[in-house]
Length: 325
Picture 1 (tube, helix red, strand yellow):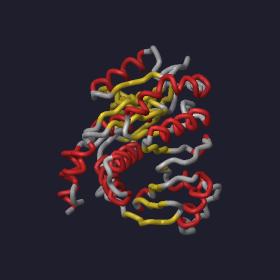
Picture 2 (cartoon, rainbow, N blue to C red; picture 1 turned 120 degrees about the vertical axis):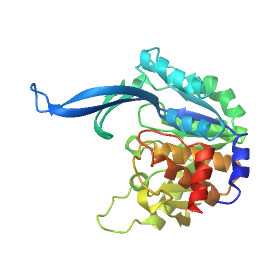
Picture 3 (cartoon, helix red, strand yellow; picture 1 turned 135 degrees about the vertical axis):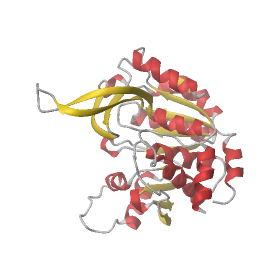
Picture 4 (cartoon, rainbow, N blue to C red; picture 1 turned 180 degrees about the vertical axis):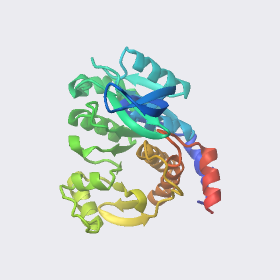
């Protein structure tokens, strides 16, 4: 990829605001060599625990890792998980804006045995505990939006992003002339329109378009892109296709399909967060949609070669691209 050092210099000057469902990812690492006498389940001997930021907070970690400034807004409760999440984010130089709410900080605990996930344990409150009003959003986020170069809405369907909040943030971003992007979760349909970028995966794009997947049939790319532009008025669309790479669309028309950059896939956890962060950073830095997609694709290629929720640094990405050249 030509011009990568220059792109990183521009990225280092960007300020990105991430709004969405932040969470703490907890990993329990261990081994299982016997079955419990109490029930037919493995007994895990725990070796260590690790924690990192997940959800929208992982988008923020990826932005910071790639060298830009970042503020993340989401619910962080006055509990142990919230304290640990703030420590992780602040340790990476990320500013946190905790939204009003009365629930628990979202915590996902994964038990890994010999690097394979055995189970996941989720702790979270009902969606209503995390919702904020348009008035609260204006008071909390107005200045942050004006001071940013781009705004990312990261939806994990936990309750932060509502129709009211998305409409208000879009209006504020448009008034301030800021790029605004959304990573949607169609199972909790949001009414959004007039965004610069949305980044669904293949299944999510079909859901957003109101189309059912047809087994063994080719992905109806042209129809999906046309429908999403008609329904949501999005300027740019990037559909992540897994092992088939990325599909790029502008104003409802297919621009290009980029093959995947991944050499090997070890763990896809958080790869979508990396793709989103890299895309928005490159676009905010002035790259074309195609160049931004190549940058994002390469960043994701590095991350899926790591275990667990991960990020990529400029040095890792430069080395990765040099190896591929």
